[in-house]
Length: 303
Image 1 (cartoon, rainbow, N blue to C red):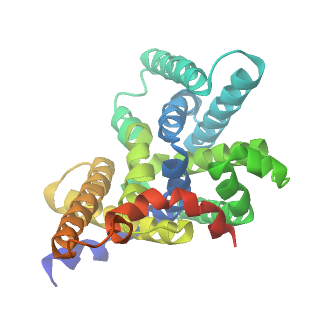
Image 2: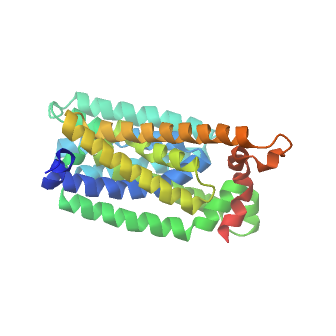
Image 3: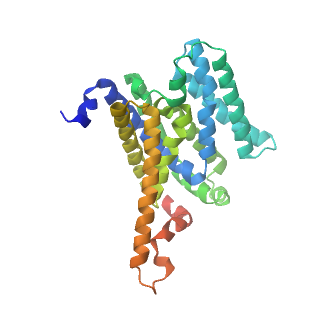
């Protein structure tokens, strides 16, 4: 049997690959909106905001995924509450709660003796320990994510373009923002077991960044981001198997490397196209201007 195909004969590796691909689907859909809306800091904050719930669930012997979901939901709700009731800006509210939740998580960990062997899994995930019931939960999360993203697609697009236009069209941009934050929360919680609290944003952002270099339409970006994420999962797992590296960190590193490779290839092709272009050709025909025009064409994507 070929050396590279050997891991596919092991059951836990196949489960990890299946779970990782489902996570890639969720992150491909949600990560596209995170990149378009510039919500990377929110994803990072929710990732760290899960730490108290995960730590408390581990201490009490409760399901870790449940603790992560409750903690992340509390983080998201508190951000919205601070923004509406107080005088703090959105990023300031995120920053304060980020520090508060992370500190609370560290306090819980520091007072527990049960984290001696669980710290690595808590921070970097344990995708190789995914069980069939975890895969079922991820599959349900995929269905919810795709359903909500499709149902609110028009609201998301118009709100990203101009919130005032969204209000004029009766699309309720505030509701769209709340739903988008909820989707980010679902994506972060679903990705937690695969890559942990520290690396979850890498899998959420990097595939979408890689896809945006080649696409201008949002659905196409989601599809390409999903494929890049799945490739990162496969590559990371193979590297982890053959070189005895941490699986979650290998997946996140592979995703970032694929994003860097995508940007590099796009830049090389753009330079080559410029050299072949006639001197009298107008700038409007230059391919490198396509990404700049993409935001202007956003309302057309709702059709």
